[in-house]
Image (cartoon, rainbow, N blue to C red; front, side):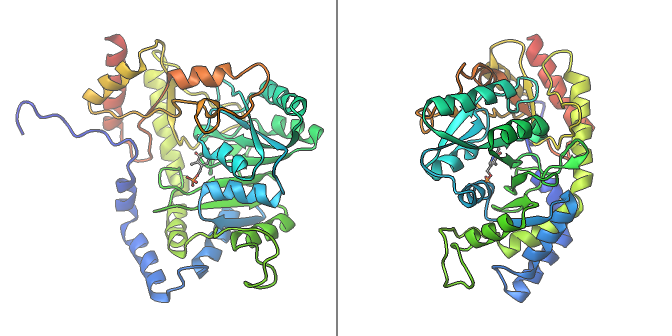
Length: 382
Ligand SMILES: *Cc1c(COP(=O)(O)O)cnc(C)c1O
């Protein structure tokens, strides 16, 4: 060490710390799979589905290969296709709208609320009218639970019911969070999630799951998961995918689910410290009444325009940041030909210009977090 020594950069997400905590349990779970060799549809897959159902209160859980497949499989099961419109927020990860476009249907982008980053009800209503005006058949709504907290599901459900639309909840970032006292996935609406490593409950590769109380839908999803199989593997009754979750990932997730509640509590402690230490200098995220968050991201809004300068100043102090999302979906090359709700999407566009996310994970200790908050305050006062 010399006088120019700088401390190591703060990790943005520390998957290694969790790996060290779980060490032997994961090794043993993986080695059980290596011993029985049922790499596809092994007993761990069924066990994980039962444990996930118990965790969130869903009647049926269908695990699958990714969060994107989870969304796509539900849209396929619902028969969504060309001529249909599915309403989704524009300020989200691209997989939300991509799954709709992959079916041949039209994603119709709506705006979000500046406080919660989730669907704005007035824009949703305008979007349904826009779809009809364009000659599209509004078929469903994908309600995204962005950054860790649920959307306004009762209000979205009421709009959907009045219009005869289905609701698919994209909880890729928010599995484990509660809405009005119930876990996402466990209150009746069809819910999709992702187990990508950086999500609150992540595996060691790709994975996903679908939660539903509808037994017929669950059967259809299980068929779609294996090439639309009917009574047996070589009876194909519909189009499907190779959509299964690996046994190895299921074995890993069983161990990670055991500490998930504890990790959610740790994430909330980190979020509380950020709000306490930064609430007077930046716009800190707001958890809506009736919600709890699992803090997939801790996303702030800056009081002034120079986001790149702010990120560079933090980086120089060893603090990484990320921007979710620098462009909303309707501003992306692959999606800008799709329609947006009448009135435009001014909030999504403003957020894409001024949000920035800080390090957030359950193993962010107080001393390390103080380096982050000190760097943020210093960068803002410069
Ligand atoms: C991560 C994510 C997905 C896709 O999940 P994958 O497992 O990466 O396919 C879908 N929607 C949202 C909002 C996400 O954050």
